[in-house]
Image (cartoon, rainbow, N blue to C red; front, side, top):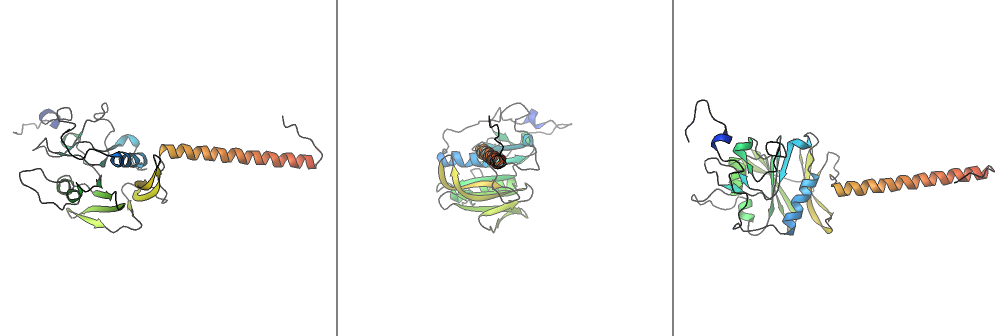
Length: 255
């Protein structure tokens, strides 16, 4: 492609998400139940307090196009987040894919859920065939330069976090399977609890107090419990007042 003077917008000369495939039915490793539920929990609890909700885009199992020289090359992260972009493409459409040369903003964090078929590629332990596209590790580390890369082993329930340092990923030593990300004012950790009626360790976000960020369902349950407690306290207060009045010889009108 020849450069023009003045330069033309990527939207004019490069494919957009409307032009690129949004799915590949031949791709192996279609999501199982864990790969459907775990990203959903990450979605529900990812609420960085220093970013407005309309400037956060999160996605799971969505085509991520990363190289304008090879516009069909893509990866499908199990979960990723981009900061500073609208949830909708050009403020109007749900995304069919995420095309970095059109968006102009790269993912801030990527999470991969390890499985036997993808573990070596996820951890950068495979040798690249120069005739094939680069692996996930190379794309995230060297092409997109994603600041944080997390992998979660669904069988060992082990979290590993890598931070970009000097152009390479350096693994972070974790304390209690938790990692605080100051740029987000959020932390990522392993929580043992019940989600969608399944009791097991899950990956989720926590806040600066160390408390897990609540899902909308948990918030509703918490509000209902608080309302129940307030009603019970009001009932007890009323009963005490009635008892005091009766001790003074006054029969209260309880109607």
